[in-house]
Image 1 (cartoon, rainbow, N blue to C red):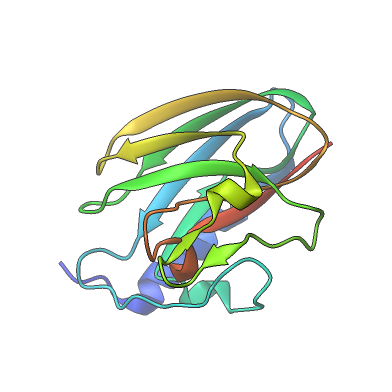
Image 2: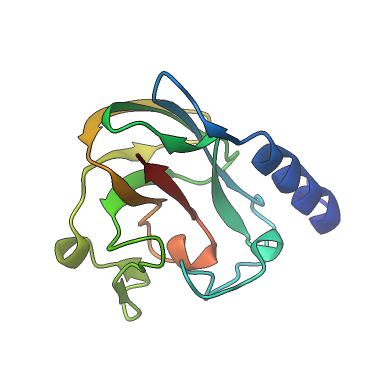
Length: 160
């Protein structure tokens, strides 16, 4: 079934609108999504590039944008019907920070940025959980399967 791009963009906008600014119990519900097998993959939708997020062919949507420092729980759902995804958590240098990108591999350079933790290899419909202690700062949540990050599969979360 091919999803109408306008309908898909509207669905993404509706999910994003559910994100509240602060969630007291520091649990993030994370949705890993894509446009399905017939989607046209976009490229160049990395953090800080200014791309129109409504044109992303993949994405990460979270229910909160800010959590308190300390133990943070991630409840991750791969909402795709046909693609494997993962979620990596990395601290950025600040609110305008970016992730180092290896264009020849189509992935973030995790060795250069480091990782606070990850949920790997989620098959379609599968859930995963992660608990980490996070210090105040700005963090990127991203899928580092080749091509997915540049297709828009990332979100930024603030820890206060």
